[in-house]
Length: 188
Image (cartoon, rainbow, N blue to C red; front, side, top):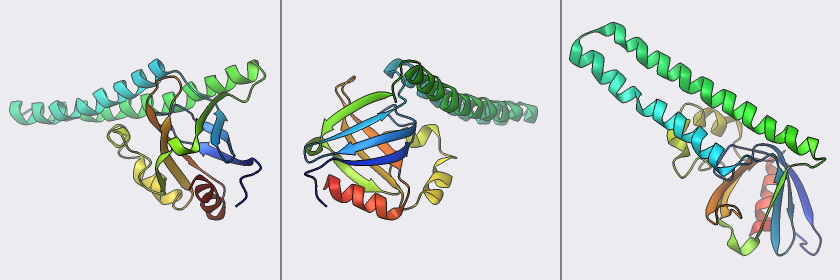
């Protein structure tokens, strides 16, 4: 593949630690990768993930409490926690990134841009493995469905985040397996 010119791809980004979501535009040249799309702030993302993790963690005492005290009706607490977790997860996934999309539109932009060097990209994967760095704990029931429906289409890697200064996970699907292979070939 010729990297003397810029190659552009369109993808759909998962809600990973890079904080992009929804439809994105990816540009690759011989030196760098740029991603443009709706992106939420670090604090909002961390709070959203933390709330989900706490709700799932609270299921452990919610299971133990009815066993110790012998009151099975308290098992309803488990259902309530799971339901609340699902609502916060779903509403956050929809509302937070749609708001970022709207704010970008209001500024006549496609979204935020993140650019990093190709040499800074690590751990490139196709398919499973996009839910790394603890994300698997927050949405365990969603991962198998996503893995099954995006097999061969999902690209994930770790690269720098200009806001946090740390490596974060970028994970998105492309339109076809051929396009995914071409994209990964360009990264390598």
